[in-house]
Image (tube, one colour):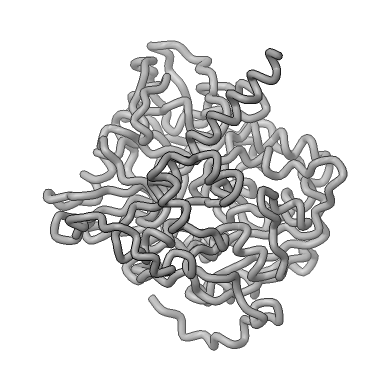
Length: 462
């Protein structure tokens, strides 16, 4: 559903100054779900919970086979600072503790939970994090205890991201409501339906980061959400709403900071290096929903859509719900060709329908064999420069692609800033030769990082 709101009234001076350099404009394909309200997804008879659901260390299982657990109960504890706990999405019985499949193809320790059919699936409150009396450290600990990670897809532990390093000052808290990924409307609906949770979450985030003010960044294709949030900002909350032009990948935090504040995060740097901490809007809403009740995250909003889905929508899905069960419930087509977790630009095409929904799953996009047209051949680079014009990080994807072909990984990292690539897919999207540049870079970055770790270990031994 398109908004009829006057576009110009939402642009501040910062937004009118321009946006980040380069980028692309893929078809949005959001119209089929952006007007559909969030609905509760059916509880699966069997939940499959991998203990690896975040960047960093996996959680450690604290329950046993045959044990009955309640919804929201702790199932696996954090194993360190870069780790978060795992809570039960349903009341049920632990049937098995064994390795489970993941989207990466790896098998990791996990829990098979059989739901109790007679349960009301009510979630009991824990120990609330009192906003007025809690210290910064207590808020960050509460966020970790709730098992919250970045819900935009990165799954980085939120308490780690919010920790302002010594010597740094957070001038702005940026709430990322851009959602530039095609097909996905999860954040859009959260902004329209969970405004109170968002504002409560902002209160916790302002206190934990020490930021004096917050900015909610929204793309111009969500003017109804911008109007809704702007008209409901509590009088005592230092929050503004900034609308930026539609362009991919505007949702990258570095791009958003440039668009709204005109600041550029340095190569290899973090947002805090320019005085900013960025949090996804759905993550912010979960903080505002869970911390006042001392609960852990058990479910999240997911857009389920694509040409291969009959019952498209935005659903509140229990974490651990098997993908195969999800596709059955939304009546996916029989001739499925590709299923993406996340969107088609930065999401991952799954190779196994027996994996399950995890905390970082923002969307499921299904394509049939009629929709997918794969290139029959990869052609040599023609030096057209389209990828250079598209790259928002002003890298040279053409040169990086050639170096990747010759396995010149150190040169890619040292002289061509490979690690600045955040795999947005803009280069692959515009390449007329159908070169899978993002896949090349993803593999190259993995090798470079392994070499860095190996060198550090060698230095430590010496």
